[in-house]
Length: 127
Image (cartoon, rainbow, N blue to C red; front, side, top):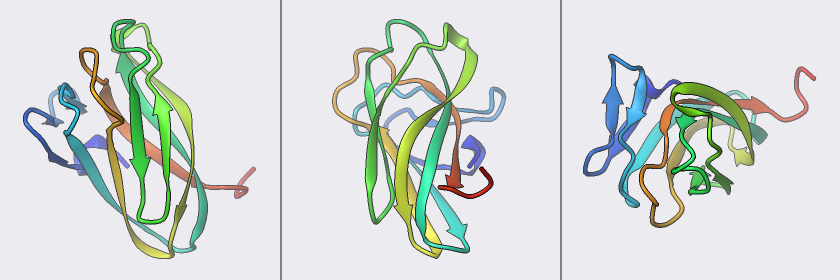
């Protein structure tokens, strides 16, 4: 789910087309939301592609569906100019249309991260 398909809610968070990211993510109540249709319900492994520096590392974020949520920790990618994808955990989705939300899990030290997108893969499929 690329950043460009997210709907954002918040004070500053928005899609930045020139950089293909969601940013700046500075406020604890800023939210990004995607709609995702899947053919089969079940567990899905979630990965996020983001850039963050050492000052933002350690902040936590939530990725949630209507059926479950995961809390993950921002890792430094070496700076805001370097994007890395890393596994966040597993959420449950229903067959059909799902609402996926990403938000900070509390106050932020500085900025959560620049987010390029989320990837969801049905657990146990294609492995």
